[in-house]
Image 1: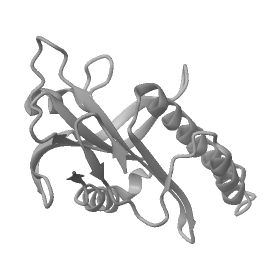
Image 2 (image 1 turned 180 degrees about the horizontal axis):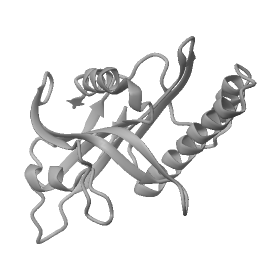
Image 3 (image 1 turned 90 degrees about the vertical axis):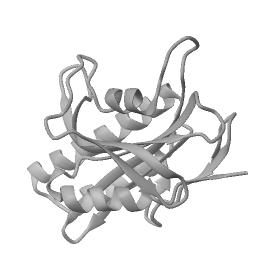
Length: 198
């Protein structure tokens, strides 16, 4: 749960997800657990890359003023699953228009103005909010000065009731590209729990 100047909200995340540890101690412990599952150098390099992504995502969230950040790095028999979720408050700057169509057209676009090839802008109905705009796509994100990573992403824009200039944006991302359908189903289920509370 987090508070904005406009409203409070609730978002249910799966039991295996934790609020992002801004200090990095929990992430380091899970990384050690994941590395202990394999001696294969390529797999260890992949695990290290995924955890480097996790650290960068949490740093970026802090810089952007996320209201809520949660994630998981869970080791299953089939491999490592990582995903992140954040809620951001967006307020229209004075004198500008930031309608849902404008906001959704900006979500998921790189700094160079390039949208993912598989980007979809749609309208969905959430049980506790009503109709909202949603953007999905495989985004390429700069991890370090010379390393880009691909993430499955879903951005859902929640208009704050009674405040036409305010939106809460629920952003979910995962580097587990081969699980695209399952990841989007999970992201939809999580986002569907979003609700404003008094």
